[in-house]
Amino acid sequence: MMEFRGAEKMKYSATFNNQNFWINVDTSDANEMKELHTKYLIDQEMIDYSLDKNEGAHFEYNKSNDTFLFIYVVPKQYKDNNHYETTPITFIIKENIFFTITNDETKYLLPKINELILNDVTISLYKLLFNVLFMLTDQFFPLIEGIDRQIKTVNGKLRTKTNKQNLLDLSDLEISNTYLFSAAKQDAVVLEQLKLHFVYSKFNEVEKEELVDTIIETRQLVEMTRLSSQVLNQLSGTYNNILNNTLNETMRILTVLSVLLTIPTIITGFFGMNMPLPLENNVLGWLIIIGISITLWFILSIILSRFMR
Image 1 (tube, rainbow, N blue to C red):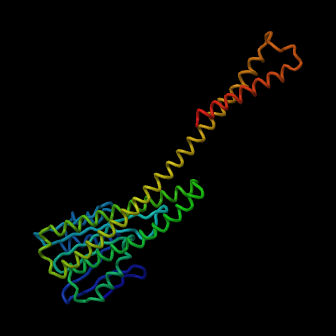
Image 2: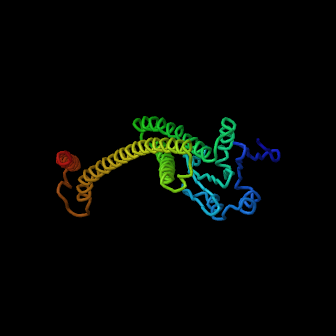
């Protein structure tokens, strides 16, 4: 079933498998968060984990009250400052209740969970968890594929013109991929750790199979994000080298010009002194001085050109 509260806010909950319950808790609702501790006896430490927007992927199992907490890092659905970022989402399984703790950035998941339950009303708690994790992992792939397409576009633009805007676009892609790569690695590691934990023995064969499927999916995701990261690093390094070479070439040209310009400056400065000088009474003296300057200028330019080659 699905319940509605108010005209704008929707509260998701459902009953499945005749005995299990799904309850979503909104972190912006103080009363709902308080009920987790007072009504459902969830440890305050676990609640604090769910409120931390910088929490990394991990899981905990409290054997004394049979409470399982799982935090998974997922991508945000919209870009922030022209790049994608990630955020944690919390799942808690206690007795026969499956809790999801979401906020405005992760509530997009709720209709998908509801659809999973509607499609399989006999689903178990942990099978539901692993199905949700599998679905969340799949949320990464369109973003990674989009980044790969944008890499080709930005690379084409940079080959045409290496300007500030194109370099900023490349930087945004690097930031997005860094967030997604870090999240994918965290999620993959915590799933692998779950297989080694004693709580793994509680899972039935179907649940173990679902966990393995999710692990395989996260491994594939890690490899995709790693490949994109390597491509971006290569592009970034290449265009940094191009910019450095361009700067070096510019500085070399300016240095050569400054050296060549010193010749007429020195000669004209010498003949500009207020004292008796050669050629001062010669009507063609200024032409001779110009000729000397040009001759020395060409000689020095030939020497510098050979030296630079």
